[in-house]
Length: 204
Image (cartoon, rainbow, N blue to C red):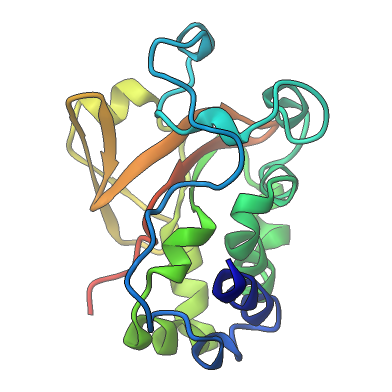
């Protein structure tokens, strides 16, 4: 957690301190949110349309709850979740908050903090360059609403960066490229959020 905290601080400062903080120097931690235990698949979340076995980090009531998120724009909604603070900082560092606030009916794939902690040194170095950071943030954005049924049907979608993401479902897991949905189909005021366990880096 100490290393992850330093990673968060590095991203808030434009990712300048990530390598020095030690990200990517230790074996990857399980990419699941910390906090409350994941909800079982048989939980009432099925009735709300949420998917993924890790929705337990979202509180039932108050700030950060599904109800609160539904009245917030996507960027504000992600900032209310401590487990998503690294990507929230990345959005701000990439100066994309305003653009995302103006968008409607889009989908944002948000990597959990531990997904950033699992990056190796070359990936962290790649993200330290501003243009690469912007590209990666844009790659997590699809300018249309993606439903769980759309993911399960397979195929691909085009991101805001112009690149393709491959969709699919394996058993109960919803997949986006190599990432698994931790908690998804979260409705915000201007878009839909899927929390994922890996950063969707571009091929290079």
